[in-house]
Image 1 (cartoon, chains in turn red, orange, brown, purple):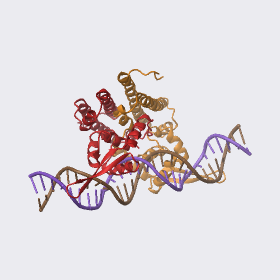
Image 2: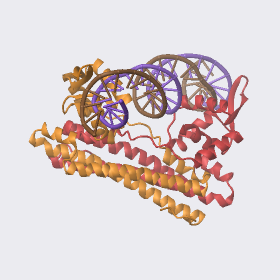
Image 3: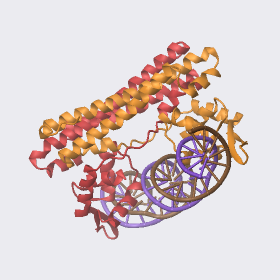
Image 4: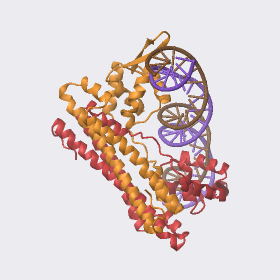
Length: 200
Length: 200
DNA sequence: TCCCCCATGTAAGCTGTTACATGATTAA
DNA sequence: TTAATCATGTAACAGCTTACATGGGGGA
């Protein structure tokens, strides 16, 4: 159910078409909640049915059409209610730690491949999130700029502070995943002797 | 697809009925990969159809029946192949950091509730994982003891070491989540003034 | 005229959740 | 005899993935 609130968070800033929304999504809230366009378009339709948003058809050229959505009062209230409500935490389902817990079943090479892939995976995420932190500080994200433009001066610090806070948490998480996997590499070396071809 | 490998990891130690498996699951691999029994029983049936395991019907009392499963050669090979194969990482979908990033939309009370619930959530996980770490060190987990009993002496250190490694990672993760949320509490205090009723 | 971007979806399938359903055995 | 535990499921639904499908607009 988080997807619709992620979409509302963006739409609250101002009306957007499904396409624009999906583009903005990828470079803002998509950093914490991924969704492909094949999920976004139907969800927007459902949200409209539920009265959270309304879409207006706009013509584009001669025969092109696009739907521009805006948040209704009911949508605004649903968003604020979600913000006050407890989150439902998913039960843990962590493939990397599952594999790590039974890594004695892998060959030394398999273990090293796994750990290096884990490092690469989280270095990728880290780069994304550090980039976003830098863009927050530089006020260099289009959605954030639009949001700040419609935010009363008194609330801007708050808005920025929470955004920084969220991304700082993500960055720290990526860092400990990387450190953990590096310790795993050392562990494999200790248990099985050093690798013949050291990983770059 | 991880569930079947989690189940294979347990069954490889020795044959178990669906019921026993499900009980052992909850206190071992279930710490990293949750699954309810309503998912385990059908999955076992599917794994049998796929030839990874075989079940034998045993009578229990006069008319009771239970199926005891063991891993086939094909199952063993599928498990080892999975251990060597790259993991597929799920795209990020993190409700807590999603909410944190837009926490300016919450009231001060809502923000505090969210952060305190986050702390409580991860303290619960932390307790589980620290408990499991202690049980690993004390050789006090039934499945681990059975596993070590069928593991050649030379591989026991490896088995223990990887299990510790996995749970250490989980413990660290829980700790930084808690620290992060505590910093969030301070941030709310700084932005909105201290809470009238400080959280216990 | 061709290609890239704009624009919006559908369909099949898998995984997981929640709730419900059923009956047997065993110990108090 | 009653309750706990053993034992095994089914059904409906939600959410997400992957692949496929279609066509218009605008610039080189």
